[in-house]
Image 1: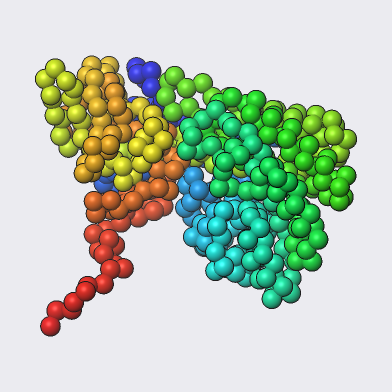
Image 2: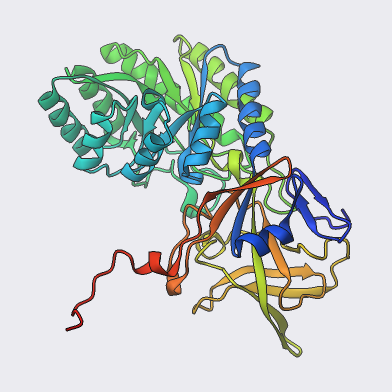
Amino acid sequence: MTHTLIYPVHANHTADGHLEVDGCDVVELAHTYGTPLFIYEEKTIRDQCRRFKDAFAACANDYEIIYASKALPIIAVFQLVEEEGLSLDVASGGEYHTALVAGFPTERIFYHGNNKTRWELEYALDNGVGTIVVDSMDEMDLLETLLAAAGRRQRVLLRVTPGIEAHTHDFIQTGQIDSKFGFGLAGGLARDAIERAMASPWLDLWGLHAHIGSQIFELGAFRSEISVLADLLKETREAFGFECRWLNAGGGLGIKYTADDTPATIQAYAEVKCRGLREEMARVDLPVPRILVEPGRSIVAKAGITAYTVGTVKKLPGIRTYVSVDGGMSDNIRPMLYEAEYEVMIANKVDHEPDTVVRVVGKHCESSDVLVKEARLVSPEPGDILVTPVTGAYCFAMASNYNGSCRPAVVMVNNGKARVVVERESLDDLVARQRPLRSES
């Protein structure tokens, strides 16, 4: 490879100068399945699952790795992570239903969400969900009502907001004091929630959950999070005998989107959380609970790429060159939502050096529909297949039908074979649930 770009893990190039991913020609995939197209490496997803398991096995006696499904909530991935021995977290009835259809063991599912509806809780309980992560007093009221009616107890964790502000984009911070998530420490809310859950005949309180944000590079924030939680555990143990069996320290490990990014390794991430938990529990003289973590982005992001077809190349003399592709904010809203940065390459010209500075934009009726503000490409032309690497997390999950776009297909590649795991939406799919105001007479 001649570019200093972020390539897929199992990338190569063909004799024709095409990008190849685990033995599959990306240009051929684009022509066969259409664009935009999400392409995933099965091996990379499995490898990331194993790296997390190996890293935590090396530094913890009791741990559980839970895939954060919101990153890519599809049947095929749920089945892959289950085969690799991971548990699963879901944050809606839809994600939970997808997990059930995938055959995921419901006792290994953790159900999150700051506003679980009655039907979602009923659906989860009816299907034997393993653990519910309670997010508010109102939710505790509703959950107790449902459990009392069913005459059963339910294992729960309580989500605590530790007041730690991670160094990441404001929109993906979740652990600060001013947050819609969880029970804050201010005013004793978290302490009150623990006391109440312990007193409930319907709630089986196993521990706490905390998550401070996503795409975090500075690992010190995780240590601070665990220190705060340890103090809370000591306080509640002394006050009313709370024994924490599970401590879910969330996810948040950052990954490499561009050549300039310098994230921590999975091993360093595991060591900070495991050592931090041991040392902080020793400080407060309490036994070490099972540590649970919830990686999502760091399992699937680098496994995925998006292939587009270039439609127009518009040169504005003295200003810039715009390269328009047949997707954009309907399949990757992250640059517009979080100012996320990506790199791009032309899949049918990977054996040439980039020579043109361009702005890569989508086809949608918004000036903000910009995928990459400044990129270097190899003499872009209409019909080229343009690829954005590291789009495996949140792009498909947040895809939309804006401007009547059909959401892309998802293809999984492995050892030179490609398999469609999500069909492309059709024009008929766009209107299948719509009903006319007036019927033709």
